[in-house]
Length: 209
Image 1 (cartoon, helix red, strand yellow):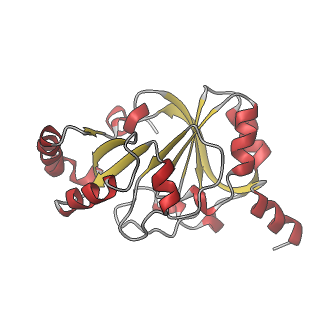
Image 2 (image 1 turned 60 degrees about the vertical axis):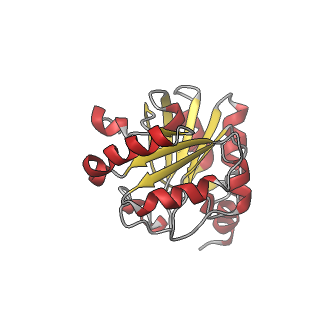
């Protein structure tokens, strides 16, 4: 890799862009809200049920000038959601400051497994057993979104909830392929543990990105 490109990537001036699109946020606290999504390639957390495994290999996604990504985002809405992959594998300082400079609210969806970088209005933390979050991400998370694939995940969710702040919003979300089986269990759990709320992948029901 050319030295100048390597430095640009380290500074976050270039990012492996997988896709970008304007849609309705389908999950969690901001479900139903118009949002511009920026999906960054690269992830080594390795969730077996991940529905965007094509994002894992950052080399498959073009190294894109961050200024170009920000310019594209400037045309749509107030909320910009940076997701992946695992976006915190990359330096998020440059892109978030640039987005804030044009008046955008910056949201991130992360496993929390990497050091927190960037300026964020909302941090959605979705911990994975394969690579647990860093404490600094637990501390700053605004939303804890736990994916429920099997019954053991309720125990994991309860353990993770103890690590976030008292102000963090708690959500349980059925893994899409197990939604018919797990949703009734989630309903019972939330009714018995009302500090939690249910998150659904409503964008899939609506057949939108």
